[in-house]
Image 1 (cartoon, rainbow, N blue to C red):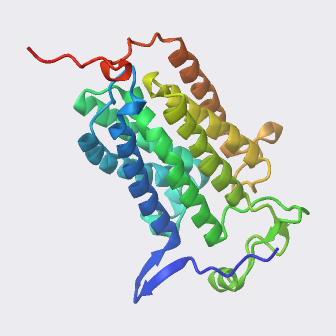
Image 2 (cartoon, rainbow, N blue to C red):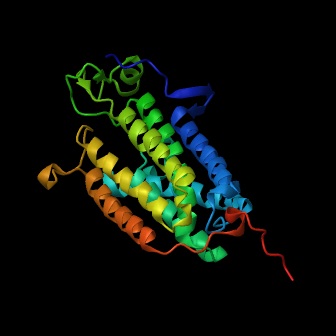
Image 3 (cartoon, helix red, strand yellow):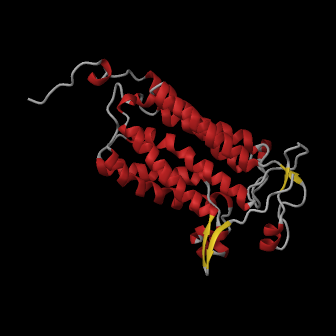
Length: 294
């Protein structure tokens, strides 16, 4: 299948360009913010514990998260995949608009942001994460779609009928050649958008709305990082390893190495949260009148 001619730049106004990649990050943060706010406002989800924090506090947290996503994602890409940039082009670390973001770095950045927010507001870190985690796949889905539009992060060669040749006029004009060659490859960006984005979102939607696992500290966070890790490890088997990466033993890739601790940590959080006794049901969940202040 030929790769479609999609311009990575949505709008060009003189020297100012609005790229699909940047728009995906902005839309992901905004949509995730509104979705998480909706979770906090939905009292039917909080049957044994009150919502972890208020929608007004979510308005404050989203700024912390935005900084964590962008800063952590960029630094993670540099440290994990292009460490040579620190010596050859240190200012390139700040050129976020040129692309190059790491999911694992973004998770670390958001985790640091949530730790700081929890400490400042004296809130339960795990319960904050249980609200943020269900919203994260929205931005991830959009980001992987933007990777596809950019014609980057392609997969390994394949003879499957849906294999795609990541070469078009736009790519030739940008690079002078086609970095992926003119061989059919797995559209691994779309695999990640489907599994780590859409399917993971639906799994977490079940956890929040059907199973109401937000009442168990850390379980939703555990589901998020464990399933992401499993999906990423599986897709890494058909995704082309990043250039400059060493040959890791046992056929491992950097994405696999970073995802294995996520699976283990996620399973631990699920086990821990399911063992923890639930507090009594809230009055609103049992139909009893709420206690009034004296």
